[in-house]
Amino acid sequence: MKLNRPALAGAIAALLLSRGTCVLAAPDPEALVDQHHCMFCHTVESPFLAPSFQQIAQRYRDVPNASTMLEQKLRLGGRAHWGDTAMPLAAERGGPISREDTHTLVQWVLSH
Ligand code: HEC
Image (cartoon, rainbow, N blue to C red; front, side):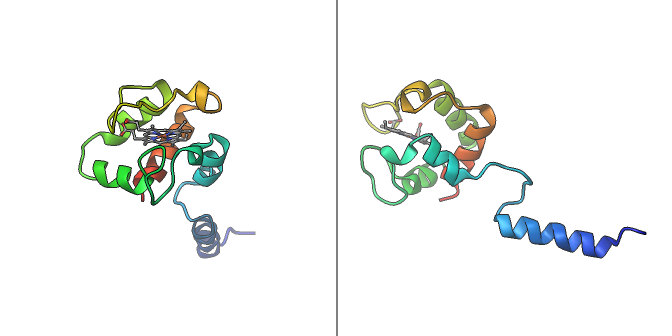
């Protein structure tokens, strides 16, 4: 049997759409947010113990290489950019976090 290319392409497109992402097998950002307790201090819209994800996205929208800086900060820590309180290190937030997961999370935060 020959592979039916249009049907295959359609199936892949449907799969991508249904996942709401353009990368196959990417981890789900919302699950990672839960797993790492990001919402313990952050919310999407209102500043709470930490800047909201919308504020963060707005601040870094036009900053070149912001995502690289933020990924590094999430994984390894860094000085505070919003006030006197730096974000606790990953180990104190719920456990170590992989490079790939950090990338997914930062892309997600910056998409707000
Ligand atoms: C214990 C509280 C706490 C938790 C949990 C937490 N954050 Fe934060 N976060 C902060 C604080 C406080 C700041 C502001 C730090 C600063 O001034 O740079 C911050 C800042 C940030 C920033 C902006 C950093 C910058 O340099 O501007 C990002 C992005 C971010 N958090 C993402 C996350 C993600 C993703 C998670 C989950 C993996 C998370 N945070 C979990 C408290 C927290």
